[in-house]
Image (cartoon, rainbow, N blue to C red):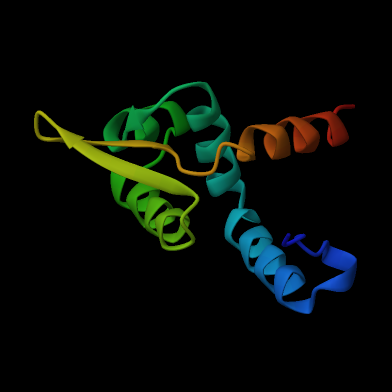
Length: 101
């Protein structure tokens, strides 16, 4: 039986975790993930909610996609984004609790 090593015992897992944390360690990307925790959304709606240009949101989504944290589906000429890693909901909840005043 194979038992997964935890972070304290696995340098490769720690490296992977650090790369994931770098991918989400940006205010816009954190906000995008927080929105996608609630529902999937298309890029223009994300841009509107974030009050940013669509090009900026698209750039941030590309980074999240490259790290396999969000996924895209295409429907009726729109690209819809959703979390590819469901555990991000727990992560965002933890970040929100840690940053409450």
